[in-house]
Image (cartoon, rainbow, N blue to C red; front, top):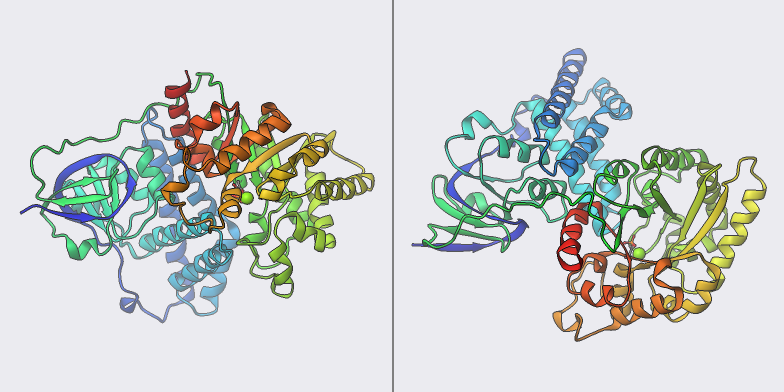
Length: 517
Ligand code: PEP
Ligand code: MG
């Protein structure tokens, strides 16, 4: 008899086949606790070398005709961690102190992930999960407990696993596996991004390894999040055929990217992004153990500029506070309730360090400086005054400074006329604006009755900003910028610039090309 389990959709498409189970996590109880230094260091470097080799091979094997850019990017993030000398130094140091390599690897990545998750930001929490995948990938290499692809292939077409890494997805495609059911995963994890890029349907089903049986024939629907055991005839298998990115196609709307880490800038050109709508500098604060020095901040921003070429770059002043509080900010935690620019107005000493680093990184170039959470023109004037003072004290200033205000509070919308007189451009932060407009947590979805056309609060706010500032000066950022519920109303109101997470650019381009050209 047919039976349906409802899970979560992670990657669209429909696939049917026999289930094959893959378990690849060994319990730590089986591991030796006493290790010799030389042997353990050798074992660690062997695992590191094998991991690097695998990642390079993956890159070479991915078909060039696919939308492989995102996959490359994910693999680069893995390589970045694996090749980071501070990671190897840390592990060797811990082995010297008598710990097994696997404990040291876990400590390093758990600590990193904890720092990201404790920031409270949902996007950062996703990155924390990605970091845990890098950890598992390395531990699997260390213990040689990876998915045994020889064992899996030929025994089934739908893989069931507690979790899979992005690298596993590449193997899945190569071994002719048509779909995946995982127990752990989320829509925005690297694994899901890679599955969507390579057209592999994927569903998350809690306790899948208990609910399902190896060898059963199932159909998974990655758009609906369903797993149907013994499906009735009639459901059509439907792998998703992704449109190639319409690279050359000129759209009447410009697309920019919101990015969090310098490395993300590498793929923007190929994705067709005109530039970086927001570079969220706060992540350099959030992944650390203490306040970064001026030199460290400058180095970090210069790292971004190495990858941006001639792309437009809006550097956002760190939007600290709210759900983005560094773990080390104990003594001033309550000041961070003021969020964004208001926090720095209370901690001018920290702001001067931050802004000097930004100004110095842009020596001899145009600095487009975006101010977060602007609710009043005074906040812009305050930033301009400090920036001008700091520029005077430097030998190599930027060629020019262009100011932008992020409008993400109802007060900012209502004060837009005065704010606009102080800035050269405006970015609408639709995530925070939605949250403050409706009094709802950023992580919650609005109930449907608050969507347009029923409730036009966000649409009317955007229209008002465009009317006052002119569409050329306005970019819409955040989730609303890729929401097909909102876009028809916003684009017909003259909106011309959108800025979204790079992972969503291909589907946004496809949607726009279908609906606008
Ligand atoms: C927003 O609020 O919509 C936005 C883009 O900024 P962030 O998500 O970084 O708060
Ligand atoms: Mg915001």
